[in-house]
Length: 410
Image (cartoon, rainbow, N blue to C red):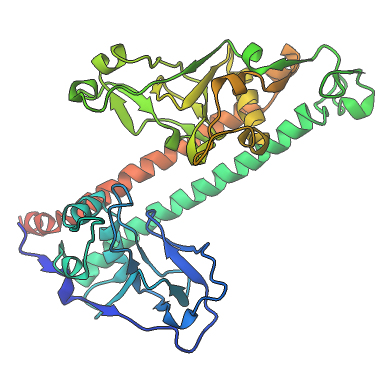
């Protein structure tokens, strides 16, 4: 069933145009998220005439795959009519857009199977390369232009819904921070008469963090929480610790100021028993303690275990967990600055335990809208997760186009 698979090299050609005219186009890089991104390279004193030009609907990829984990850096120029790229990238284009839509081809490149293929076909000693020759020898189904356009349209519908949901998630985050500041920093939560508390005669008392409402207190994170735990990593060398996949296991890379609804990896029951990781309850707040995401947090919406670079904070109510989550986000920069270490930032559970938080009265905590924001963030996150699964189904459909054609004749 691969008669409709074609050699990609018959449809694409390399483009190697240099910036000899020294055009002041934006300098871009290619991310493993399959997108062009503004480069952060220092180009002062650099000869920009050697940089490559990329135009709209052309592609660029980084041939070196050994430093990208399981992904290949490849992207299509969609937002820019003209841009510049480092000489390290290979630029190419579709020869005839009436035979192969660039958007359809980019969908193929976004498939997880293509990443695995590119890594498998990479060669080299010090670094592994997915060469231009290997790219050209790639086989993929190229159906009729009408079928390509149909799939691209379906894909774009899903992408647009994901974008709208991401906008909603961002707006909800901004709303939460505004509520947090109004209620728990400015102390202008609704008073008994419905007016803002502090500016309408609400009783304030002194604390180590300045004035706070009467009946409130300042406490450490340790005392604010019911419990705090670290995770652990079962030995990677023992396959039986990871299969069968039964217990969700969260890594620091998944913690990025988000609502976590599922884990990327799982461990086995044996792996759980043979390591010191713990099962965390739903509504735990997780903080990454090491690496690029140190100080970032997640709100856990399922039972899971974690690795040793995660600190889990368990509260006795969802209201307290919601307050803690947005408090940590609000003070994230200050918390991240407490990290020590050499090449990578490193927080510790001991540092996090001593952080201070304003502990409100039970009445105000229960009336706070922050729990509702968490619930809405969870709904939007779960919708995005459904859309991404539909996206994977569309990717899978690309390999079954010939079957569709065959069955349509019956």
